[in-house]
Image (spheres, rainbow, N blue to C red):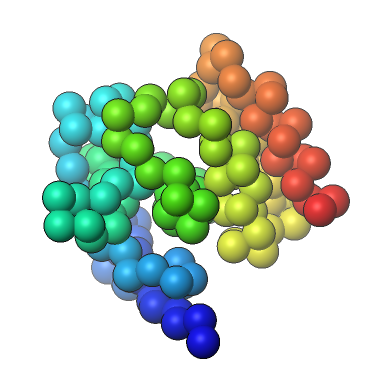
Amino acid sequence: MKRKFLALILLFSSSQVQAFECEGFTIQYVPSTPQLLKGQVAAADIDSRGNRRILYDAAVMRQLPQFFQDHIFAHECAHHRFDDVNPRKTYDESIGEPKADCEAVKLLKWNAAQVNELISYWQLIMPNKVTLKSRSESLRNCLSE
């Protein structure tokens, strides 16, 4: 029988706590430093004891809209689900980025309008990102899966 665990995500824009289901795993959400994150906002990680974690830059996360925070945490949860966790990889080196993006959309149960809002926000904050076009196309394609 597949066990489900609830992982709690703190919503930084308010004092609420929202349950986010990362199916099959107990995930610890750990504020981290930009140095450990190597320039990323968040990263899937496994500590030396084998505990699955999502490290995140709390200062940056507080500045992001809630829908983008939700996508980031769901995206990192997807890396754990696909066992695509390697803290030595940079954001663009992981072969699982498009797959994690798509799985995040499915976990969040987003529709085309919400995916387009995510892509528009990406374009706003990362206009020169090399992988943005391919990841945007991948996100749109995953809606039809």
